[in-house]
Image (cartoon, rainbow, N blue to C red; front, side, top):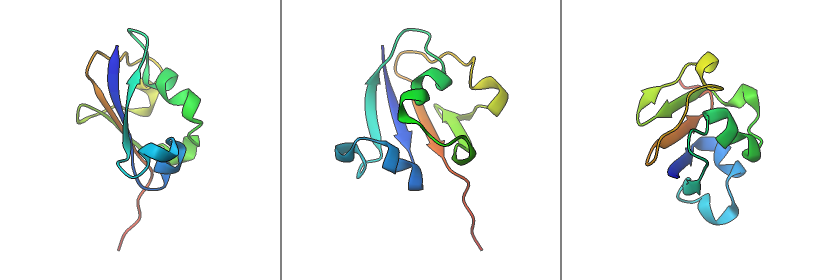
Length: 84
C-alpha cells in the first residue's frame, strides 16, 4: 500500500537527497505497517521524533509501535522546536 511520509526541519536530512527539498516522499509499505516499522529504515534519532501526526491527528509515543497505517495515510514527523 502507499502512504506519504513527511519529515520536517532537521529530520529532512534522513530522507533521500532528492526528496529533501520537498520534505516528503511516497512509500510502498506492507498493509498494516506501524509507524515504528515505517520509520525504522530512516534511523531517526528517538530524541528528535517529537510530534507525530497521521492525517493531522496526533499519535502519542506509546501508540507509535502499534498504530497501523492505512492506504493513503500521511505520516508527518517534527523534531522538538524551540522559539522565542
